[in-house]
Picture 1 (cartoon, rainbow, N blue to C red):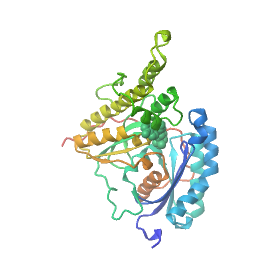
Picture 2: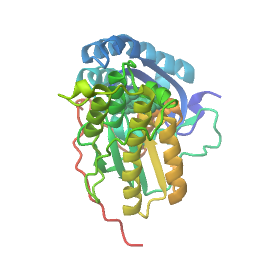
Picture 3: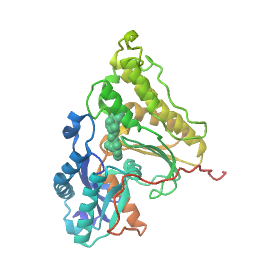
Picture 4: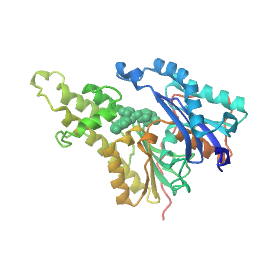
Length: 362
Ligand code: KG4
Ligand code: ZN
């Protein structure tokens, strides 16, 4: 049986918004082939992603990555039914590479082209299934659901009535949670990317050693703020400006553990607020690189158990940036009869208004 015999359309998804060049072939939520070429080694010496280096690396890698995903899926280019790309938000030069490649492929093949929002795509990553899964087990969440994206660029909560049109409830007003992990890693001289390294160091630390602040932006508000936490961590490591002479050295593992506890505590608190403001929600969809963190996963399991929500937790591989989530969201839009014109421009940001949602009284 060839992959073409599968029922849902075959969608190629391309991702190039930051420092991973990725492609995948997906049918419905089944991932037939997927390749991720990470650029972490290229950016490590700079302690963060350098946009020009990222764009150049995407250019070199994009076609090999597409070929590799097709080969793994045993799908020929001519078998594809559509091409989707994450066209926003992200580094504009990096997005241009993936968007141009996707448009060229769609035009050459004469198939629909779809630009999808990278952050919205993270929300479907917990629905992805391996090619071998028959029948699909996980792919239809009951809606409405709450959505949570925790990544290097985003910390956002959504109400999801339709997977293709999530409604933004709250987001960070300064740093994203993953960015805070990366900055704390840099203060502790752990290298880049910092999230996994902070998590590893935190294992040997005391999460209650320091009482780092969690910003509270108001009882009703579902926004996040991580800049105050980051500053407190800096003062704990280096001393308060002007009083460095009195500073006592601290154990890095205790800083990592206490920071991680505060960063995750902020998510737990806003998630609880979202759950109580949306009592009609019956599932939680999550995505983004920080979802790979074991303490985050445990917190999500605890909160969903308590609130009786079905948790759609992506595997560690699907929580980070990948082409499969892009293809899957593109496939959902295609099923709704949508596609985009080839003049769709990539965009560094997504313009979304926060909605204070009042769910129907049950
Ligand atoms: O979703 P993602 O791959 O890219 C963006 O769209 O931003 O997320 C990358 C972020 C980085 O900030 C990285 O440090 C963080 O996810 N991250 C983690 C862990 N693994 C990756 N943060 C905390 N704990 C982890 N285990
Ligand atoms: Zn991402």
